[in-house]
Amino acid sequence: MFTGIVEELGTVRYLQRRDKGYELAIYAQKVLGGTILGDSICVNGVCLTVTSLADDGFTVGLAPETRQRTNLESLKPGSQVNLERSVTPTSRMGGHFVQGHVDGVGEIIEFRKDEDALWVTIKVIPSMMKYIVDKGFITLDGTSLTVVDTTADSFTVSLIAYTQLYIILPQQKVGYRVNVEVDVLGKYVEKMMSHVLGGGETAQPKSGMTRDFLNRYGYG
Image 1 (tube, rainbow, N blue to C red):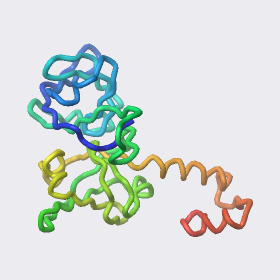
Image 2: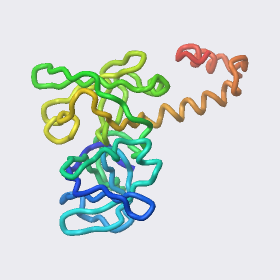
Image 3: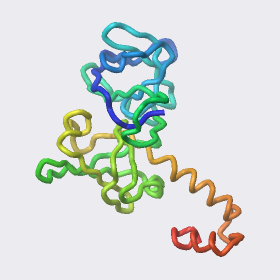
């Protein structure tokens, strides 16, 4: 598990095929501290397992599912990536609960300056939007951010000046494909509500309180 607070910008050394899979090598320094083989490091929002370590970086393997669901396959030597080590029992929770399990890839459709802040609008498939709410959490390339507003198929975040210096998002252009992980709490709520409804629209909640809750949030 991670917090979405980027610790370091790493630099891709190479991404190449190894036997039946792919290996990604990254130059890094800070995230090497305390890291051992088999540990998890979040790379652009993707939880990956460290397969080798060196004084100036580490390597990870990419499974077919990872390449299909994320933007990692587009990385080239010299590309910068957001890095974060997994949390420990003594870690400060500065962001939110990030699993490193990417739900899908969104597309940046607009950048807009607002004094020293930067607004970024991202389009995703409509089925993901039900988990994205105004003022809720969202993870973009491993960065924990707050959703400012939403439309039927897009959402906007705002980056303060400090954040812009330490993540890769401001370096990108319109059309960039960004890894998106929604807040897992929304998925759990949906799962619980589906059981309350009994799997069908005609099922009736057992209590008036539950019925009011479902009606208020569009499940009634």
